[in-house]
Amino acid sequence: MAIEERSRVARAAAEASGLDEARVGEMLPKKRIAVALEDESENGIATFLASVRMSLLMVDTVLIEATEECWRGCLAVADALSVTSSLQRVTGFQDVPFDAAIHVSLHTSSDPRVVVVNSNGWLSQIAAEATQERSPAAPLEIERETDHPNPIGAAAAAALGTGEAFMRLWGPRPRLSLGWNLFDYTQHELNGGSVGPNLAPDIPIDACLIGAGAVGAGFTYVLASLPIHGALVIVDSQQTGAENFGPHLFVPNGRYGLPKADLAADYLRRVRGGDVKVSHFGEPFSLFRRRIDHEVRRPSVVVSGLDKKLPRHQVQRLWAPTHIDMATGGLQCQVMVRTNPGIGRCMVEEFTIGSERGEEEDWSDRTGLSIESLADPLALITEADVAQAPPSKRERLEAARLQGGRRCNVIVLGEQGIMGSGPTFAASVPFNALLAGTLAAGELVKNANLDRDGVFIRYSFGNHAEFVDKTRSAHDCECQRSHTDDHDVAGLPS
Image (cartoon, rainbow, N blue to C red; front, side, top):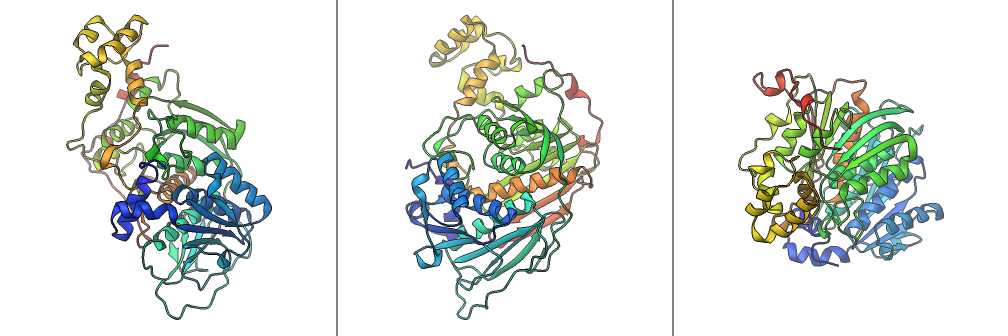
């Protein structure tokens, strides 16, 4: 396995354990995670398969205890991720060696290595004994009178359970007995929470996903499991690299250079079929926005999963009726929601630019085009563009010029060549990305009937602490003015 593979997961493990990152990187693939299915409800199976997917992305050995049908589902997931050899089917997972286990069950366990999860409706539940407890509590039966299928609760349970199992690979953990309602974000002890309202049987969407990286994949994974119909546009300019294997739910091992927008679109089409019209664009948002109101309809909901501040500002300045922003950092994630018009805090105010480089500077480095020429990215490449470029860039620019290419064409090619983040890459794990995407999908579902303006949610896997607030924007923020400027952007040439 290449050194970049699972590097972000290893960095998260080092953060969780305090161990040397290189040492953790050697240990991580050798860990053995068991995933067992006892609760064979619709929610249970969804939680189980998501847990299997995330476990396969983190370690080389995943032990499976499940029915024949669910075992075939595991093989399909492993085949899509090119890690079939990592799966081992067992009978009685507690009779074989393992380091941590995710048990989808309605009965708690006295084994501190075993994390029990289940869900019902909007309620996700998780339980595990303290790793250093001498007298563990007697196993508890978890109550369930009626099944309320809901992929949001199931995905959250998978993220919580896999996250806690991951934490237990690296050090002592306290006793955990938690029910979390993803509808109103209340937390309770086991058997103390509400399942929330039933999910609507038919959910219309008219949305645009900006960013198909790890959190964008988490959102797409959950969205595809919902009873949706309508349209989704996906925008991301980058291709996958080895460092994306691990945190990204769709990136297969050893198969890199795949457009991230393609991966998300392909997954949604495969799962939803013709229910959702999916369009995708492998280009920077600042170019894509020129298509809006020309060849792409202005969306009702924009969902963003971006790792830079300037693009967040650009997306916010669409002033979409609803904007849902997802973010992760190490072992915590957050989601912000703002409606327009609205008084909730916006991305322009939340994320100050500081010393972040402008994208024109990055484009200039990659393409050889001058920053001045990039002020008009739709213009044809000129002889002057070629002459002013560094010698190493002139041949490609001249070839593009002779073919009648535009500056935006070489910008897109330059963006697609980005595969890797260098030594400063951030810690990232699939369960954190999935939870961020799950929260965003839940906010999308709730948006139609509830006031979501200013909603802010943050969750930490270190101590399973949540923070929920209603934000308010400053009265002099630009988001409080009326906005018409983005409706007259010149379109891209056909």
